[in-house]
Image (cartoon, rainbow, N blue to C red):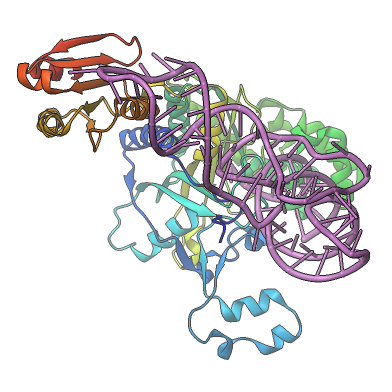
Length: 446
RNA sequence: GUGAUUGUAGCUCAGUUGGUUAGAGCGCUGGUUUGUGGUUCCAGAGGCCGCGGGUUCGAAUCCCGUCUUUCACCCCA
């Protein structure tokens, strides 16, 4: 059979994993510095944990795991006859692949609430799965790197998370704009326009502003049943780029004013330290995930065409779904695959991270091969990443292998070297060769 | 889920209006050389032409289905 992998999934070669780990390590270091602790959760969750948390669209994108055993005995024959896939699926699948890291985290918090010391700051770097059609920068399996805090509603945490974004992306060398808005501001906008009932329709429409333009948004809003007068009011508010003018517009919306207050509070904390990247209020930022209730974030790369490479926000009642009320949470997520693509496109990976092997030993014959193995042991004992070609075959072949491995140095060992103890060190870039004793070599490689 | 698009050697791709044993470059293997690679020279291996069906004397080529690729929409990291 011809080997293949499922659509939307990828293999990662050594150099890709090394680059990806470079991103992960950078993110992890910053998370730890800000006091976040690691947890991991299973790839599979009970479907009941996942469904209903991401909206109808999200539910459709959940990967379901077929039950084991004689699952057809217990299946819903009526639903099958009616060709009701959703209902039938319920009867043959009780587990699903996790769709993000936030909902499993909320589940974890509720299950472990007695052992957790609140506020609880955790980070998590694991893959998630979505049954989406693959596209540019979209896969069915991808890594998320999340940091969340639960058990405090302090706006200081929003500021801290924005600082994490700023610090990670400046370490990686990616210029970004951190966009911030507040769901309460969006609700205030709906109230001010008199369309509070159509809040969700309004937010999904204006979220597309940068893509389809004001004209497209107008069309979309009127298609969703909004009155012309309301649309006009919304358009007026969408052109606002600062908080001040909104205060007058929101004078009858308690929620809207609260949103403005929260954003101001955020800035009181955040502005105490200069940031490397721009943090920008964007009233058109809406975000699809329906569990957000307060501040929302989105990060876009300035120098590459790519969807958002990070997002997050505050969710006041995510644990409420699992029976723990009154625990507020806020978190951010990094899209590792997209960050990878952006860094690749802009050539931002450091040159030397892919080269881990310091030197390759090659031997001419069997006695010198064994002697070279003892040299290899010495180098490794000194903490140097080294390798010996497994057989003393033709030099041509061994050198070709060295090239393919992109190793910077080759140590050539033959009877001459074995007798004198002076080893031939070949610089694979310049092609030059010189003799060194073992201690000299160790010194050079360190 | 909707609309397009792609599939031929390990990789990148040719393959004429349907016509005999399907080609190239790179890579790979062996030889040449031989105490030295990123530069030769010679030889060789490797293809259910994505998969299934159909039209035809004859299909890589035309038709249908299916899977896959890429892209846009929906949605989203």
